Image (tube, rainbow, N blue to C red):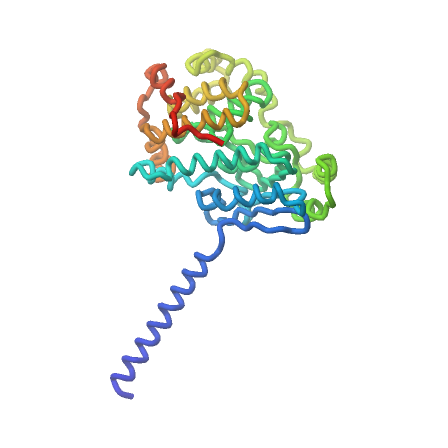
Length: 382
């Protein structure tokens, strides 16, 4: 065999190998990030980024929103179901890293992502057909926005709910200013400021989910929901209630915050975040000390912003809350703490953010007011 022939064979093999690699890369890219299917008389949305815990990005928002609007006016669609692919997450939040990179360089993604995500949140909140979110797994931030504003939310023992934004210099957005202050007592404010995690049945007990169903029963539940013929809200409630009644896992366990509910109402009743910190330090109980320690690590700017957001949001419609939150999102994009928080928690993971300002009392009323100020023609509109 001549040297030329051997060289040709090697080249051919290399070319084939390269084509295989490219083919594999192409096939992995082709996998859609959202699956939008019509199953019987149901529209089914599957968030399909399991390796990224189904984190929500702008292309996904841009696929879900028009399809939702289309189904809303489709006489062949009775209900809409949304779920996450894989076994770990419904949706672990928005694609924060992409937004961070965009914000640093002044790319329009930092405006577009929040704007279009909030418009989607509003569409879910005002949806004319029953919207059912199967939150089987991690449900945080943007994932909460995709679920909590709909008619039904079904939690399982795998559900992990949190709004941990104050730890990254952000605030509990996606309509957090609407649903959190409507939870009982001061529970919503507590969850918003501390980022406290609720698991399984406790997500329903807190009022974040409407139902609790064991994870293994979810495929059967989904089938029964899809098979319903022209269901009323009551028909859907009946199916969900039936499955909930068959799910006795952890039923005997008390709500994780049961013995602290009155403490939370008392300690988090103050007209300022500084007042809450004073209450916690003065109380001296193990629970109060733990919450004071948690809050001391959060962005002071975020804490004050969040407190004011929930105070205002308690009496606003979801639409008005989202307009307010869009202003806040853009204030965070202009500021320091969001980039520093993402660096410390998600990039370098040193868990040691250097907040500016570093103390609650250094956050001026004027700087806070600026965060809530109108953006004029750049304000969010629906």
